[in-house]
Image (tube, rainbow, N blue to C red; front, top):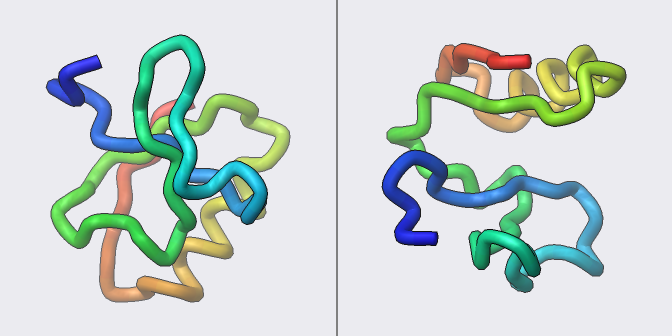
Length: 69
């Protein structure tokens, strides 16, 4: 809850953005709002890993993220 390890939850669904996770209280943001200092992305559903990787690479190609599955 204090965002010590996880800064935010990222979701492409605009209906979820700018709201908060019920369980942890983390803010839900759009992929375009990713902080440039973020270097790790935790993928909760590996079925979407390719889609997530391609999407992030298109919006911020200069950033090299480390993905955790």
